Each structure stands twice: as C-alpha cells, then as structure tokens.
Image 1 (spheres, helix red, strand yellow):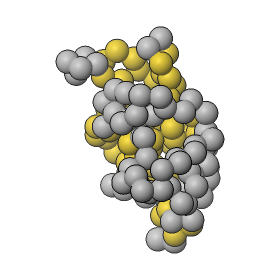
Image 2: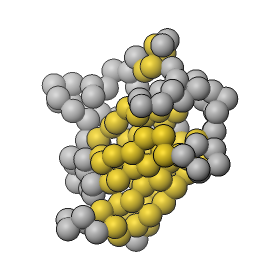
Image 3: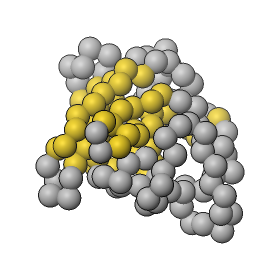
Image 4: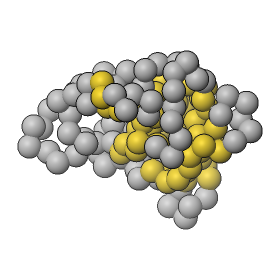
Length: 134
C-alpha cells in the first residue's frame, strides 16, 4: 500500500472531535455490507475545533485533542464511494445522536465527526498536517 503524507492510500481514517464515545460503522456504497465497525474514544480536550483547520500548538504533547482510527479490515480504493455512520453515546452507552456521511473518492478517505450537545455531524476533509502526532 502506498504512503501519502504519512497516511496509507486505500485506507479510511475517522476523527472523533466530540467529548463522547462513538460507535462507527463503515458501509459499502449501497449500505448493504458492514465493511468495518467499532468504538472510537472521545476527544481529550474540552475546547475542540469545529472547523477543519487544526492547530495543535504543543509540540511536546503525546496526542492531539481528538481520537483517530484507521479502518483497515477492508481496502478503501478510490474511486469507491463509502458511507460512515456515527452513533454518539452518552456516559451510559445510550445512543444520543445518529448521523452518517457519504464519502466521495479521494486517494485517502478522511471523515471528521464534530458537533455540540444539540447536533453532531460528519465532515469529509483533508488529512491533518503531517507534523501532528497521533
């Protein structure tokens, strides 16, 4: 698998920018097959960015203020179209919000889950700067 800016081409990465644990399911284009699924940890900072401009200013930090997961049980090959679903959980593991996104073809698939107490949503984007640790 080719590496582009430190990320594996043909891979999918999801970023959780919320303060909640999230159950993520990755589907094929028709949403007939579950290609990947699992939990993502909540973000670790209280004031998370809501845009796709990420500035992690502490070069000594071990982790950025969000959680990230590489989904690898399937190969996500462009120009494939995939769907990512997020079930946002409360402290008792109850689903408090459910949202999904259709991911358009890119050499590498990146999806960012963001929002606040009233609404959560996915944003498809570009990779974070390669200088960020995670």
